[in-house]
Length: 265
Image (cartoon, rainbow, N blue to C red; front, side, top):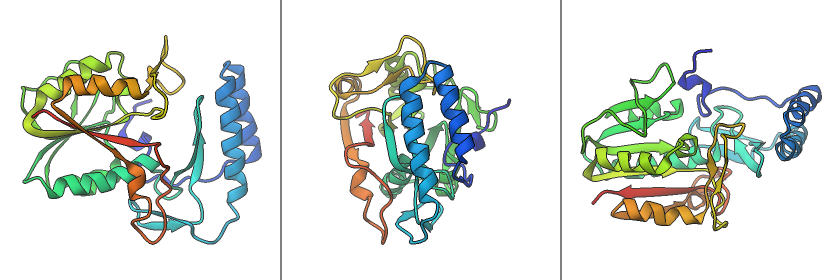
């Protein structure tokens, strides 16, 4: 199957609760594949989703599709359950709603930036449409250019702003990728970086082989010195700070999604 940006989260797909039969089948498939922790977390998350669908009072707001909702769906992986993560109207995750506020703030400080966006999410396209904006990936068919993030085919100092949201965990040599991202960043430019992880855990969990989501690792605090060794300056932002800036919360979680603003100079 040809993969496109429409297959990614945050592509304006409407999401509906699964039936009990679908939940059982999906859980059984995880168990059959030996993913016992993932199966338990999946079952718990999907059962919670099944029972929230009768809510009628709006409790959350999505700043990407501009809709209020009685619930955001929970999701899960082999490590954790992510509560109130998925907007049922646009399929955005917590990080997408928080990043939107970061992106807006950064763009206000830049004068006509040249932007490179890895694994781009369609919910952001309108935000960037008035800029010199290039989308990139190694396998998505509808991006502007195919790039290997470990060996980027661009000259040094090419971009003012680089967006890399939940990409590094899919990269075998993430340090090499960071060195390449720094190389193509302008001297005054900024890399906006997010990775899945546990930001209360000291160590990054490394996998011998990519997990069911294609992740080579789940990041921990020991990755921060790696960033500091590569970039001149690092600023970290807990996206939870944006949770209550609208009339209803965005569904963000304290100390769950961190954004790293990485500066070359």
